[in-house]
Image (cartoon, helix red, strand yellow):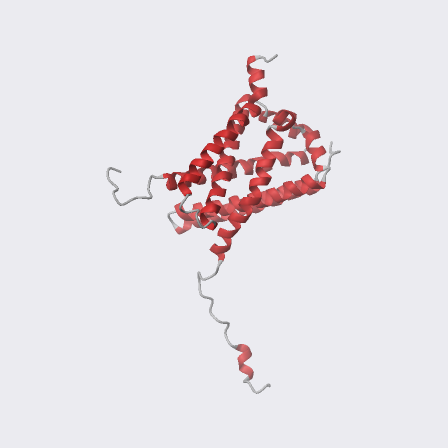
Length: 129
Length: 136
């Protein structure tokens, strides 16, 4: 990877946003697969469903949920950006600006999101009240 | 006016031009339309389930029973399930086409993906429609 003089696209924002879109998309798809299976346990018994859902409430899985939310949120915001690039006449011109805009929006949403999603876990871990 | 040779009815069908359908165009359009709808459905779902009113800690069988007593949440979850699986399945189809190196690997992965998508969509649909709050 020493010299790639002509590769203007490679390694720049357009490529990395695309890579991240794929990775978050695949991750969310695999979670969705699991999530339909765990929800299907409501047809087995309330006990079976509650037992599996209780694992969602543990600290480690709670942090994974924040990761999942972050992945979904990026995929959603970048998807809107892609639609604007495709359908808005000035989209291609501003695609890079829009990437910084959605990145900022992602942080603005994820900071309070992290706080509210993990509030109970932190209280549990460090003994709230 | 019946002057045509009767043999015309037996002519071979016109050859289909392989690879000349608009399938990929519709796929591209579907990703954008389903994507916009999913932004609202999935982010709404995540907000309700993980943040609102106690978040994930309050979720249990009784909570699901309360929600699915309402046709509104049944329809929400049904549309979300179908669109998300088809959107995700189509995304994975594209990724398999990009990275599978042999035709054989590609075929195996595509069939596995199709079976998975059909199974999960049908299972989820069945669960939403046959949910029984009084199950033992």
